[in-house]
Length: 183
Image 1 (cartoon, helix red, strand yellow):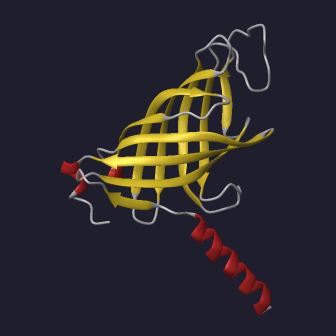
Image 2 (cartoon, helix red, strand yellow; image 1 turned 90 degrees about the vertical axis):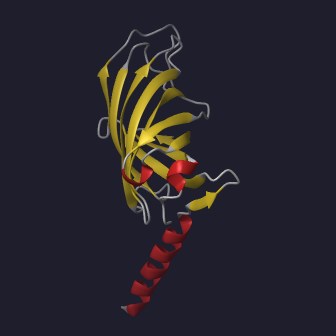
Image 3 (cartoon, helix red, strand yellow; image 1 turned 60 degrees about the horizontal axis):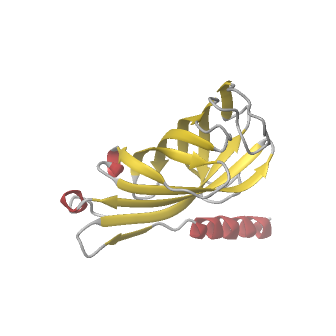
């Protein structure tokens, strides 16, 4: 009985090591924080099509009809495995804004409960369905108050209906705020 529990403990320890957040101060007095999380999305469970747009001539599984409106409420985990530790929630809206169905205007609120940081991050930008892109961070609450930076999402797996995105966070606080953090 002790043998399986030991393996379980080792697995939990290794999983905890897989989440790395690096906080530093640059030469200009700005505090920065860099880490990666995984967005777990499931079509018609955590992601819904609210309004179906106008279908163009070349529809495919990676495109959405022009004008389509999607909403999501997805869990954020520390590894690509959907059963790994949940550390946040991503809630947002996406509108397909290109006629080819590949580009979307995205607004998202990400609520996080990390070891030393709690609060939300807001982002607003343009996303591409296939290519890696940067989404600008436009603000935050709690420990993320006055945060700036960007989030770089990339599609990791698409096994319909389940989709996993890798989210690389690159966050910066201006010098007048960085001194108020003790981490």
